[in-house]
Amino acid sequence: MTIDVIEVVDYDPSWPGRAAEAVAELREALPGLFVETEHVGSTSVPGLAAKPVIDLMVSVAALADVTPERAAVLERLGYRYERTGMRERFFYHREDDAGRRTHHLHIVTVASWDTRHERLFSDHLRRHPETAAEYAALKRSIAAEESDGLAYTKRKSDLIQLVVDRERTARGLPHGTLWEE
View 1 (cartoon, rainbow, N blue to C red):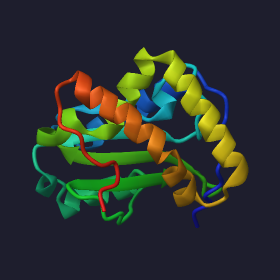
View 2: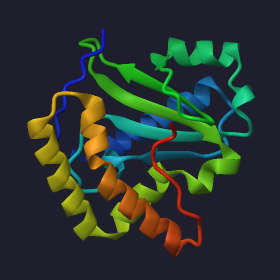
View 3: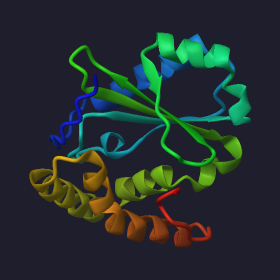
């Protein structure tokens, strides 16, 4: 049973270590599968308030490389596949014993790695603390008003889109929409 409470907490310096442990566990369990791995999302930005969920993004040569046997390994590690409708990506989540999400795992192709908005957004926030502070204030405000996770996420979209567009422009990448519907 998933409990989806919107709780934005102060930055926890243990988050990078927890992400590194999860990446090491994934690489050990599925050697050679992942080309790139990165801790993304708010918990990857030093000092940023966040929902206490470790977001990981990993790339594979092709999504077909995540065979049923490899998906079963992810399942044994506690990662549950979630159908999201996002194109060219597999999404998994992991929960603690109380049903609270602890990790998100985004599996994408290496061909799309450099253009993933989660990576672009996190990179931008790490380099622009004023934008990170604005984002933290927005998240706290929305979390105080929303109890629905999807509504919370969508209400952050305008700021995220603006920041991702800035980062895409800075890198010479075309703009695109955040929502992969």
